[in-house]
Length: 367
Image (cartoon, rainbow, N blue to C red):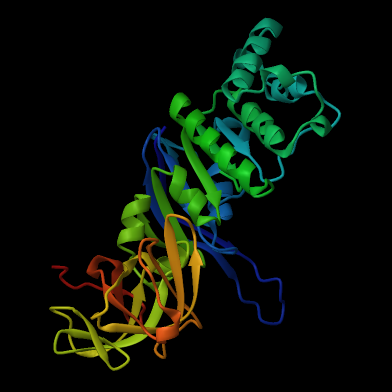
């Protein structure tokens, strides 16, 4: 099911009667979600990602704009008539019911032509349970399940209605790290098997990038960039996107361009043909540093963290915006902390320039 969001806007009235300033939660959101894809809505708290999800679900009404499921305008349609499955952060399972009863519950509320026989409902419930691999837990109560198992029950309950659209609101945030990893892989497997168009809300960029076909990065209700996860990581539209994506985060420096060369501090560290002379903000991915005894980029090393396959060199630089600079290099390389300086050559495709005022990306030719 294709979803079209057309000039979607949500404005909440001010809670402060004195200021009277309205809160724009989502501002003129335009996007077409292709049929059968998993889309990650990504951004920090307050960016409008959950509000967008709730407008798609019908739980919140847009201030302006339209929502289409396929060719159908569903903007004014009630939640129960949209054909959606919704999974919340806190699972929202009925504690007094068994797993089977929880999964059956949405089917028992069907009326008219959609009403099913008991046999058909049971068959659907067990199919949904099998899909999320909890069929042996059907007689247990939610209190007898782990967090990961409860989340699977919530997903099965959403899928049992055979929804046109599956909406997931921070579904993994209550799980520990290992369970999060397992469950996100399960969500991706289920989505691929069912081919249901899925919208997944998260503030965790690693989570979104690992399972999404496309990600939408938001800030203060405004879409910053839309694209395939790797493409957005490799080519951020602005400084916010560059800083939000990546673990460890991107290193940010104050720099300048003079005569087609990028200067960080007093050193010309990279050729940037076609860029006018100006002060710039420079972003360098941690993996963008290449150890080189004759490299132009000089940092003062403070520590070396061994991570197995790689080594993280922690250092300082007078032009760095952050207190520390992190460089990830191959573990075969040796860094002499006693030398007091470590030199790098920079990988051009891992270096990004941004306008000092607008923070928009400045492109240069990478040779």
